[in-house]
Length: 225
Ligand SMILES: Nc1ncnc2c1ncn2[C@@H]1O[C@H](COP(=O)(O)OP(=O)(O)OP(=O)(O)O)[C@@H](O)[C@H]1O
Image (cartoon, rainbow, N blue to C red; front, top):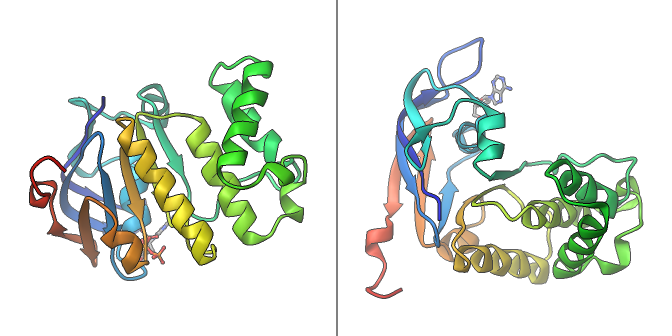
């Protein structure tokens, strides 16, 4: 089980003032943390820092106590990032997008194919496996990206706005799958604009202009939850 800790994080992009200022939060195994806040508040920036894609100006992001050096380090620590806007290769099929990621992680082609079909099936995409991503609807693409993230079976799962293009039924399915990941010990973070999705999480960090306000902490959970 892996714990990711953000401590006093100030970070941003090369040109300009920091986007995040003195943000601290623990991402605990077996729990789902919602990151909420208005557009531009810094949700994606925080997830990028948790994924090892942004270097802190001040403070630290640690995985099991080790400061994250970069994305390679995060991948080695099994920090999986499902980006906003899906990050899929449009000219590959849904299945190929998932398989390539698994093979890059060391899976054999046979295992990769089996895991891929299982992950697509969990997202209701069994019938779309061999369809090109550019031929899928926005919601199907978003679910394919989620299938890829789940197939990688990370220790930490960072999901950036992965329900924004989904209908109510698929939205609930994806939220349920994130909770299933947590139930098997994954530390899950979900950036979302959706108050219902946030309410379903175990804790909520609300960002305003890059500053964090803990709305609900894990300690607020009823005993035994
Ligand atoms: N690559 C980048 N280079 C420079 N500035 C950026 C970059 N990405 C984001 N920003 C800036 O960082 C701030 C926070 O953006 P971020 O995408 O983290 O917000 P967000 O809360 O995820 O917003 P949204 O809900 O609209 O996705 C914004 O002012 C944005 O313009």
